[in-house]
Amino acid sequence: MSSQQDPKNTRAGQATGMRRGLTSYGDAGFSLFLRRAFIKGAGFSDEALDRPIVGIANTGSGYNPCHGNMPQLVEAVRRGVMLAGGLPVEFPTISVHESFASPTSMYLRNLMSMDTEEMIRAQPMDAVVLIGGCDKTVPAQLMGAASAGVPAIQLVTGSMLTGSHRGERVGACTDCRRFWGKYRADEIDDAEIADVNNQLVASVGTCSVMGTASTMACIAEALGMTVPGAASPPAVTADRMRIAERTGAQAVGMIAQRLTPERILTPAAFENALRVLLAIGGSTNGIVHLTAVAGRLGIEIDLQAFDRIGRETPVLVDLKPSGQHYMEDFHKAGGLRTLLHELRPLLRLDALTVTGRTLGQELDAAGPPFAQDVVRPFSRPIYAQGGIAVLHGNLAPGGAIIKQSAASPALMEHEGRAVVFEDLQDLAERIDDPDLDVRAEDVLVLKHIGPTGAPGMPEAGYLPIPRKLARAGVKDMVRISDGRMSGTAAGTIVLHVTPEAAVGGPLACVQNGDRIRLSVARREISLLVDEAELASRQRAWRPRPERAGDDRGYRKLFLQNVTQADQGVDFAFLQARQARGKTPQPRG
Image (cartoon, rainbow, N blue to C red; front, side, top):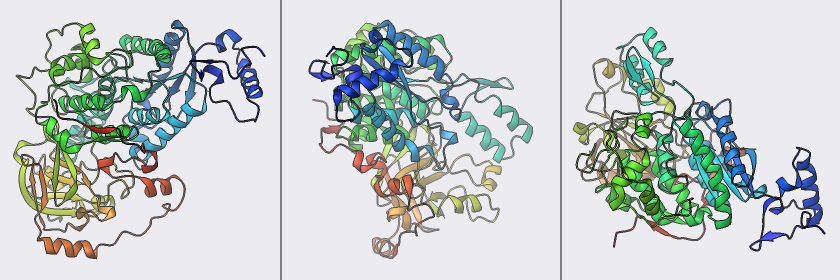
């Protein structure tokens, strides 16, 4: 039998290339023979098929403009793979866009992760390039790759360019929310909101601010899962294409080194990513996604320790919504490497990256930073602490979070009367009612938008200011929910209240008129109700009846297996069975 047809022909004792994961026909030799016969129908030669194979996960979709540069990225990755001696093979997976997924993209993140994992496992590839960008795609791909165990490298699509509205620079999606708020308050008219709608998204690519997509791009690089400098180049630039080519070449290099995700995604790597999340003023979604990725490898994100390092890790990146600039500016300022140089004393420099070198070695190779005004020095931070704070109290026994760097300072120590909305329908029906009993100092509470309550934990935690208050000039209020908020949004908003209302958490028992206290300084979120009264309400609580569609298909799988926010909203059966430790750890 020739080596081309021998299914046992391996490198380092493991099947490689076309011999990986042979289809089960009961005859391995025939399986390989048939596989090669079919792929030769696409014009491949034996010489090509004997090369190491790099799979390219293509998440292009007509419903996903954030991935609108996918054809160009795939071509550049293919070029890099071939230059390094590999055989690139493109394959499709689910693609999820934030604005085109109902009820919410988070509902489909785990499904995309399963698709990614199973396609990596099922198809012959020695390494895989994961091309994602829009909010939930990158965490889904990292989750799937972490579980699949094949050498993997992330490539993000890159951010969109900014536009211009009547002489003002604008970009999605912080400015989307700002202008929509003006429109709701009757500060701008129908013509102007239509005009700005044409300028907010000036090109393909992900949001141009430090929203969830940009946050996950920075996190992927901080984890060591991208080539250096990969987080910041905009989608339509030559820099982004060169990063794609380098990514393809690096994927080939990872094969011989067996640089699997578990070697890179260590507790030290996650600590570095958490530091970066804090310093960029990143999306609150970042902590949920990092928890989910870490859970696939048996690593626990310690929220108390995360809050501890947040007190010593200031926000240094001056990007909206915490600052003023856009991702284009961050890239021109040197991108994440500029920030990593500033954070160097706080980082775990021995963490391995996809290059086979440590983070410290990569920073040494990058050279010294240069003068710029986007990444601040420690002596002149945007915000003195990390962007995210973790809250606890009788309203959130399992914790809640607030993006303190984007909150109103005057509201961060606040006590007010609860104005309660039971669910999204109740919110939609009453929030703009002129007879709604609400004042600027009240606390808006929204229930049943958690993992199971919505379902999918939608980004509805950014409750709109009641129209009558918006028209009176109110710009912010304390808002509390068990849901999420877009990384592009700003406000004094308490999110991810755990346990959620739908499973009987204390949030379910909040009533109109109750007093609620928020103290970010004390990391407290408390319902000021007598313990006996609260216990009585909890005993009287009953779960909501099953909704139409809850008893079948993916929704049934989701509802029966999804975890709470503090565990990453992943499916319990996908989490690693063996613990590998906690992060962050105290520095010795």
